[in-house]
View (tube, rainbow, N blue to C red):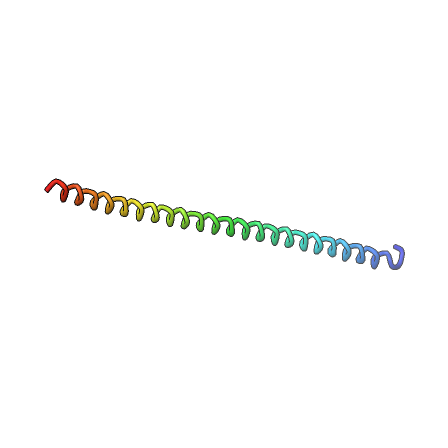
Length: 85
């Protein structure tokens, strides 16, 4: 056996271990990217919830308009009845 060859093998093992650590770091970064994508999805979901709330508000405005029209119709009925008497 050549003296120092085991030390070299050990150094190569350490380098390989370092490569594995780098791979692990890349995996962690990829996991972070997935978390960011998930956060963007959540934001999109919140935007959809806001849109839904706006739709509800618009629907509420339409309900108010309908009530105003009903009141206008009742006022017109009263005018018609007054003219008939």
